[in-house]
Amino acid sequence: MLRKVTNKQRQVAQTNIHTRRGEPTLQVVLWTIWTIAVAVTAYLNWRADVIAQRPINSLGLVIHSVLTGLIGLVVLTVIEIRVEPWRFMDED
Image (cartoon, rainbow, N blue to C red; front, side):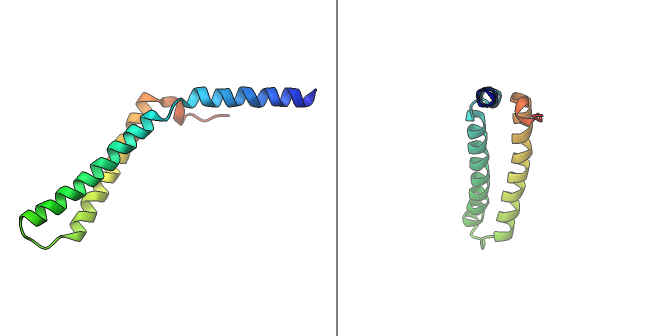
């Protein structure tokens, strides 16, 4: 009897978790956009050095990419909080 109740509670908890979390499509799209933004920033920085026939500025490349990544992570988090706020709620 106790096992049936415990199994039933687990099933209910699992369905609640799946319905609250939804599908990860938003996360996939946002992370893809973030990755593309960082890669494009690095490419544009590299390309500017190549076109100007200057030595490639590795430190500048890293700094621009890191700043783009950090700002992108903040924007990504704000979008996720606005669109799917239940992902950030504590489950007691």
